[in-house]
Length: 396
Image (spheres, rainbow, N blue to C red):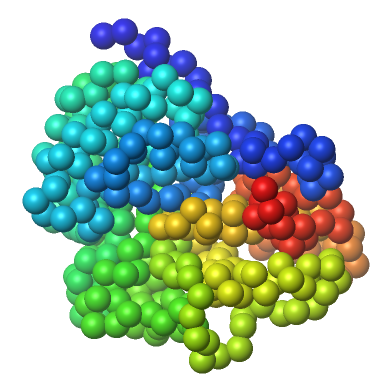
């Protein structure tokens, strides 16, 4: 097999679609490029907003290329819930055809995955690819559990050998055995052991909150975040507790999907404070975000980060800018992280911004993650907030 096309570095860069003068105005340190051959920990952070698209879509390769030109850096071609049962075979063939076409375009550097239904799909996709092996980053495994997980991961390893490149797996945690309180701890312990055995194969762990809600007949309202749904947030907390530890045993965990993107009659007040937008002469922009239900998404992204979660599944292109804009590292965060990482001993010192205390040992893991985010999402100039960055992304 000719491995040149597979091993050649194909790079992507967040916010590369912005004009150079805009990037210079926004960033102290611009985002650096990344490729699927980079270190796993860096690549997992680089996922950012991962856009799902049904693999049944006509012109699938053109859609991916268009999204790449609009700033999308990771996508999933979906064969599972987004596809009707009788369309699975045609969807799989469509996904393979799209990957083969994408391999000869600028979008080949995107982090591209196929979400399969069953183990056999992994082999069928890998065996059918020609040039498309250069475009494929890995597979998303739905309803990952203690019984099915090892078989799926072995299949991804086999596909890697077949294609001659390292393919990643992203398990989705969403099964009833995980959600139910009486079986959760045993399931999570077992899953933790399985993932540890395949550590270099696991890029990130994804949370399937829609299926979790379905277990209880719940559909989250657009006026609420997932963190208002207690039976689901309890599961998320346990997933982070078992799988998100910063002691070297954990994994990057990505946030669940926000499924709303259109106007609606609101029951509660908007979730975005007016002051940051007033200070930056962006009141009308705030109204636009609220009208598109993006205020709820922004709130949920902030809560994701507060709960140890990086990046997010998205199902609408308008959500990508919000997730990635809030992933950029602010000038203040960056300099706090530098101070912490630069300290040889413990202790505490005031932030350079004189508004908080930095504790050198307890904050070190945070500083390390912040440095990874800074590498792939950049560091904003002093005084630049998510308002300016999001405005630049949305106004293009």
